[in-house]
Image (tube, each protein chain N blue to C red):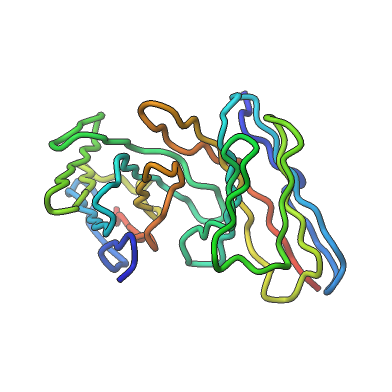
Length: 110
Length: 114
């Protein structure tokens, strides 16, 4: 089992729809959870961070964390073509290192 | 305001010729990471420094070495690059202590081996 698993893509949604990205992790002691967006040929950039169970909203983005189920998700409302990218889920343990999932490629069609 | 700077952005090296990639940071973060990312794959952690403590991933080839002479700088040395080492190399930093923070990435160095 991979340490961090993301739902296989690619994911395609029409402009204005909600895109839902999912991630599960295996290490129960994980404390910090992040979603990064990576455009082709560019480095990852942070979209959301979440540390506590529940929802965290920032503009069109909502991260959801359920530590009991070892599950974290990212919802993108009112998806725009500029949201088309690969989304990486990352999990940090006490050791401080980030372990990444394989990423889900999102395409938002105009 | 660049915070994590990688040089060069693009590097072409010959098969077997040693190459060094550099990373500097202005964030004063105590952790620095080197990731390798190949096309359509997730970033793969090679090693990281927690202050001066070096942490090597178990599956990182011996061909890859790293140096961190001070808080601001970190280097990735590839002793004998092979064709399979062509990839994007990402340097990142984070501040670890109390609540952990996200990783800040540099723009990456794309390595081509010819």
